[in-house]
Length: 290
Length: 237
Image (tube, rainbow over all chains, first blue to last red):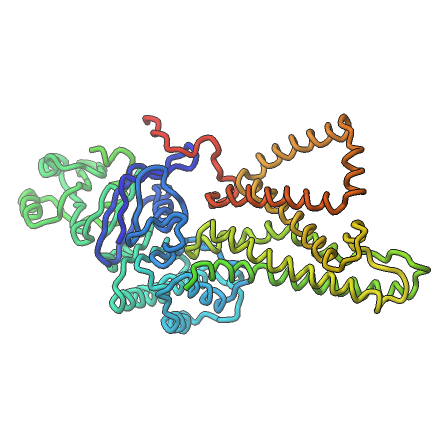
């Protein structure tokens, strides 16, 4: 479905992506997590054919997306700040969406409009941020493109609408399995939806793993400094904080039975680190080199 | 489904309001001239009706840049944007020429006195199709200038475009002051038809240049990297 081989891209002299590779042949929901400026949006633009790699190759559902009119039937990309003409209302957006996607599902689009309670005749330029997100979600999901990419799709949605979005996303994925890539700064929001998570850091994909595997990683240890250090062993320390004689660390290790047993014997408190905190620490400058 | 359909419909949607506004303004102008024709003395020139249409073809390329981003965002390509633009401009160009010349043809019947100036009057030919053709050529010339200006502006951004503009301005001023432009003016007056066709040829070249620039154009204004597009190894940190 998507095949990215050794792709590099720069804006002038400013590097945006460096030797990125990622292969995925199965339909699934993928989370793309990275800090601001890590290259997430650039990667999505390359996948959708909006930009051309300086090096390497990209194939989406068997076609090279850049400047390829056929690619519009294979990939849909809803940007975070997706441009809509000042003249468009919701009906216009849906009509144009149908022209660009051969798999367009009009009845599903209508259903989503009802679910999100979007006014059909109101100009999109007058929409709130949340409503703009809803029309982007509608266009993205109703396209039924084999590869659907959404950049921060839940931005601006309130808690209720976020839940609605996640529900319709899972429903449509179940009905028509396809590759859906969701980028986010807050992994906790999309992690329950994603089968795999790609971690982008310092302009390249550093991890691409099953969500369950990634969720097991990252362990918090708190206890007397000497005891904690003895448990750390050769594990990579992602975060360290001393409070008096107590040491609090996050280590890059699996939160599994063997570690729990080993730690509990020393009287140290052990906890699973929240995934978001683990990823933030993992992508701190210098951490990845350890 | 033809993959050009979406881009074409988006361009048409963007062009429609300004086109219909121009039709309205031109008809209003015609109405004004009809009123003025009752107060004028003798066979005086009342004015022109082609102004709004000529101006809009100059600025259409700038208006259509919003469509560029919309088309790319929905999965279209830069080439599709350019082709859809040229197709739509071609259609509206013919429609505009028909409307302009339709009103011009009606003018002898609806004006009490006086006349409306038409660019075809400079050609000294009475063939009505030539008048339509002259309008088409002038609108195409203006579109060509507009599309090249827009392409340079979008690719190079404000600062670099102003720099290019300054160089062109200095060159033009030097030409006006130091070169003998007499033969050119004479050619313009005596060989209007040939002159307009030469300008249209130059405009066609501008359109071609714009296509070549924009078929791999940047996503954002000013993001064309003329000398550093290639990948460079990052500096060691």
